[in-house]
Length: 124
Image (cartoon, rainbow, N blue to C red; front, side, top):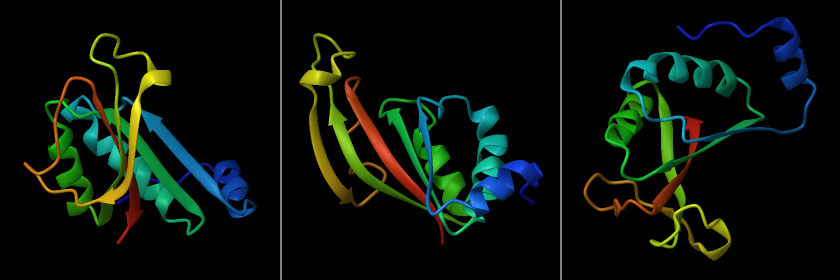
C-alpha cells in the first residue's frame, strides 16, 4: 500500500497540468527499493505525473529495481542512453545520447562504467 502524500503536496499536484519527477543516481541500494517504490506509487496515482530516473548502467541492483517496479504494477521503459567519454565520465557535454524507447531486456541492454540508463516509469 502506497503511503498518502501530505495534503499540500497532493493539492499542488492536482492543480498542476503536468508534474515531472526526476531522479538521478538514486537506484543503488537494494534495501531502499521499498520506500522508493512506495513513494513512486503515491506520485503515480496522479494521472498528470511522469517519472524519469537516470542511473549508471553498472549499478549492481539496477535490474532488480526494474523487476521490483514491474512487480509493483509499474511499467519501466528505457527512454534513452547516455554514453559518457571513458576518459572523463563526468563530461556530460561530450556525451553521446541515443533516444529510444528501447526494449528493456536483461542481457540485451549494454552495461558499461560510462553508460547511463534514462528510464521512464508509469503505472500499468
